[in-house]
Length: 48
Image (cartoon, rainbow, N blue to C red):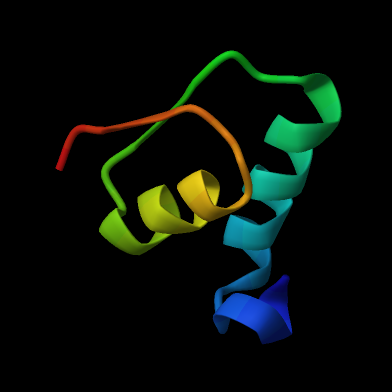
């Protein structure tokens, strides 16, 4: 994921954790992370 999206390790951990626990929604103020979450099939809310 880090290489695929060119993101920081911390962001990759957030995405992986959300997928692992089956999160209903991830709220973020990071526009790039928001798009990655969508691409990975997760429900997300952008508050930026």
